[in-house]
Image 1 (cartoon, helix red, strand yellow):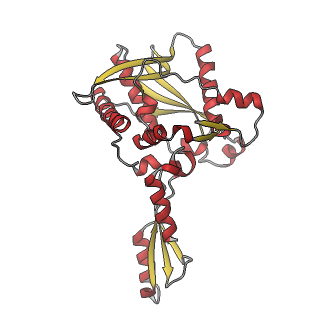
Image 2 (tube, rainbow, N blue to C red; image 1 turned 180 degrees about the horizontal axis):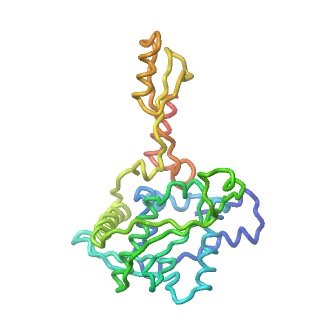
Length: 295
């Protein structure tokens, strides 16, 4: 993988961002890898040498690691930045796999796991994201497997694009730049079933190249849009959130028989802006072709 400096950021910062200190230690697979869609992981493995990432795109990850280092240096009696392990037996064909997860902060007195996220306003408006819930419940399962109790899970969200003026003028805007978000906690059997299923998919994908396409949730797909066109016009007359709304509008219009409805799939935000391998992904390339054909 090549890291570029297309925005000409200063050389010392560029070198710092390029420095990769991530170490999965004794894990066969880590929690952060496990929760990522298998199709992305397989494509990243196949095209690793051809992937280009601009340093500026990795700036948030650099700042995220800086926050973690500060937490580690200011730790009290809590467990900070410690990796926990558990080995899962996936059956005769797949063998055993050792899962590791590095927990940001575990308070033994309140039995609480806290994970720190450097994120934006839009993300915290949605509350607890599915990936966050999956990640923290995997950590909870690993910690319990190592003999420690867990009663509570939470995200400490540090909002990187926070605006104090927006907070004072918009009641729907976060009131503070740091928010604590409670995470639903699973039973151990739920977590074990989730992990085992994800591990089987991961091993089949990485070792056997057998995997499913990303789901709508994986691609962060926005809702579909239903556009109404008249005759052979290439410009839509109206747009609606549902087909039913479009049909009702057409039924109430004169020359109703001259209108047609075209469904435009919602934008796939992850594929467009955050996936490093979308240009090699058959699923995304087909999506782009379908959207182009419609328009």
